[in-house]
Length: 469
Ligand code: ADP
Ligand code: ZN
Ligand code: MG
Image 1 (tube, rainbow, N blue to C red):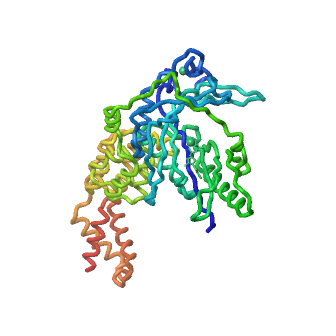
Image 2 (cartoon, rainbow, N blue to C red):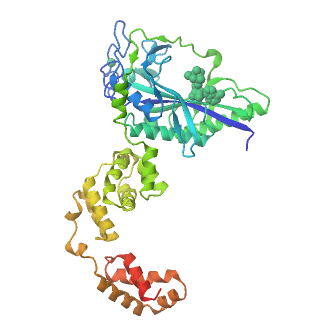
């Protein structure tokens, strides 16, 4: 154990999935020809007037409610002034005094809460494209709506930082405000980190900007933690500064120190009046909130799933919804096994699981689960039918024959069990001598004779009964 405590606070930018930008009607669609989704408002031409997109406000409130924040009655926009080519009007419209949501928290699996300071709305800037020795500017991203979620410095380890970001990501996806794809930039984190001795005040922090991958964030935090510990150990001081992560060298390096820190000269945005958020508006949003991922996990575990299964089902919103609606079939375990097994195997990529497009509907799936739960078909037939449904769609009855559904009646099972015992003297002796495993040979005999159609649980009971166990 190191003698220095780890302290981090994160500022997380989340790009909102609205059709149009935050202050104008331009499209937010990603990947269009450069500078085709622009207008005088989002490029800040003199005389243009921004008007706030109500959906952005609604999404920000959603994020606040999902993280237990207090939604402000009055929220207002501020100008954050800085000069950089990606920002043609030389200020970003953001929030400073009255953010949409104040406080709240993200709860980790340990039960520890990472408190949030606030959530605010702002516009994204354009993008610089470096090509062939020139730098071009694409303003399509300028004015795309963002929320920034600012945590308190409550994060005490690299692992907690990762879990915090993953939880945030999952919540934002489940409430439908963002796809939070770090590799595509729709979620980006600035991480602040400091170290100090137990019982002493917090140390001086550094900030590592724009982390766009969880593994880079972990490496950057681990590196920065040991760099700061080493500095203190050798009697030096940590300088408050902004650093960047160098992916190649796996180190952090200085970008600018506190002395050149920008003074943004925030002031109230004169072109956008303060917004009064009515209780009715908040209530109308509250009514459309889904069950949140951690709550879903609990429900799934109560239905009999292991925590790992529940966690995997909740990882993708559409999968969780599909599973939830299949629960009427009455057997959560069978449904979960099919989704996490056969169905996930048919989907190679994360994107496919995220999209979760199936050729059959949830009713057909529920029917298949029920057939199995009621022991009308065995596992092998279920698997075959699911494969057919995965490739061709339809419902179980499209692929089931009378023979599949016939099962094996009890008297036949008893006869076959007697045959099995007669034909496997050695296994019978081993079993009676205490080798539980030996029963498998007898079971195998019966299953083979019925081409897998007998109910293996019933066969096992029958065998034990006949063997006097
Ligand atoms: P600023 O006003 O400079 O932006 P804030 O107080 O808003 O600073 O904090 C920005 C982020 O830095 C927050 O996420 C906060 O949790 C984090 N932070 C603040 N102090 C520390 C510290 N000593 N160590 C680590 N993180 C910190
Ligand atoms: Zn525009
Ligand atoms: Mg701040």
